Amino acid sequence: MILATSQLKKFQINNMENVLEKEFTLKGASIDLRINNKIKVLKKNTIDIDLLDDNLEHIIENDLYEEKELANKDYWLEPNQYMYGNTYEKITIPKDKCAILLPRSTFARMGLILPLSQYANPGYSGHLPIIIFNSSQNRIKIPPYYRVMQMLIIEIKGEAQVYEKQNDEKYHNETEPSNPKNYKDMDIKQILGIDKV
Image 1 (cartoon, rainbow, N blue to C red):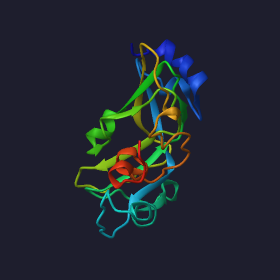
Image 2: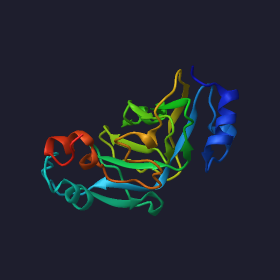
Image 3: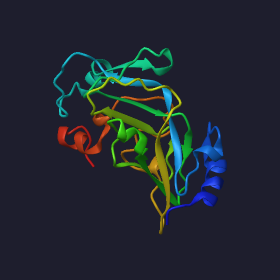
Image 4: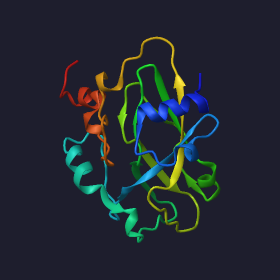
């Protein structure tokens, strides 16, 4: 069951921080979420990324991204480029619910694409990741704290394994954009023979 406005009001009060203009962000069955100030963009250099490289952690942590701040008003998202950040809102998903994250159609109409398969597990807490890809031919400047996506809250049946207790939990309590942590995936470790499960 997807929660509607009356239940979403309670969700905002009990499970969200940094919510401004609560009534303005509530829709019929979703809550609008805003992008925070700090983002990461790919560095201009081209590198080879081998997911089985023993040095993967160093490559991802040092060679892949550079940080920017949207508040500086000097960052333009170029055509065929992507950036990622986090929601301004801190969100805690209860154990009996999960969240589906969808782009606002206003963004899509400008050629900005947010992945359609973003999801938040039961028990997740933190500032949700936001990935934006510019599929247009235009440079676009995105201000901080702008509403870029919407969150649907879904009630689940049965008992869920909460995110923080999952074997591959890597992004719990995230406060700023963090680099991908592929090197912490259990299957990569097993392939490399680092962990025996």
